[in-house]
Length: 410
Image (cartoon, rainbow, N blue to C red):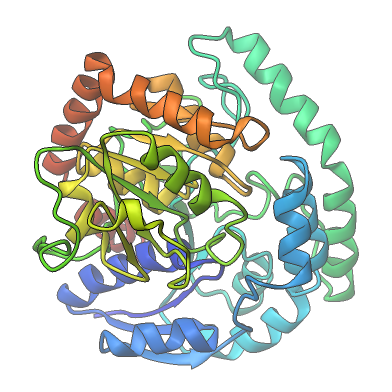
């Protein structure tokens, strides 16, 4: 069996699909070793994997993160590449190269810009992977974050070309780092230039986001790499008495939970003027829940999605791909309030496909939240569509198909 080195970075939403993939590969007899930041390494070791420290833990409460979440929707992308990913190329090459030389296969996240250099230097077969969907140009969909449905192919292509022009400076900065390391510059590193041509693997459900037919053959879609718990348990059994009223879950996932702004306060105001109950997942424990809402609102610092999602009537969240796919997997409609990264695309996608609604930050308030929740809960069309998607996703082989694709290139 093969020795496989897996490396990822980002948030827990980026790590979890790789943990699910690694678990399936281990079941097939392969030896899995991780190269991760300290916090992520602890999570992998808790599941019985070996791990080497490579990179630093993300600082979600840093000044850079605050700037990213306050910026226009394109600016966070520029900041993370210019101030985090590109400066990390040389250190990542140094830490990963000796580890990759000992492996039979190297699997990395698509945003690890050092991976192409390491693969070229070592000659070890390399697979890049991501759970984020819209990461390669296609005429089948508009550019990321645009909610047009059935837009013409020429207009979609034009949008992508404009995006390349906006972010051209990122390629130039990366080229400087590549040249310092004796590596050839790559074009369009944000959306394909730094991906593996042996296999780039989408770790998402084909029902959730079908593979565009105009993508290159080396970019395939495996399946939803679910890592949110197994058998649902009642996380509410000792908390709020929900009765017959709908319960709404409010969560900010893992990437923006440390900068909630007014998210949970608006949730409380929206619930106060409604008949609904609520769970505030990830909210600060000291958040002031009004006495009038005692018994209707529960604050949970953490709980697996499998424990909570099946019990909810709706989920209001930031739109990370892990949270978005989990809501769809359990057939629960969403309202997405995107803050950065791929969240604007996921918000556009669920609205475009009729599985939920988006609420852009500029429009976010307790009133607009209450209005959209009323619209969401009344919509039989949204309920029907998201439940149909859930049945498709649950019938798919999921991470098994991804593992089979990886074994095919060994």
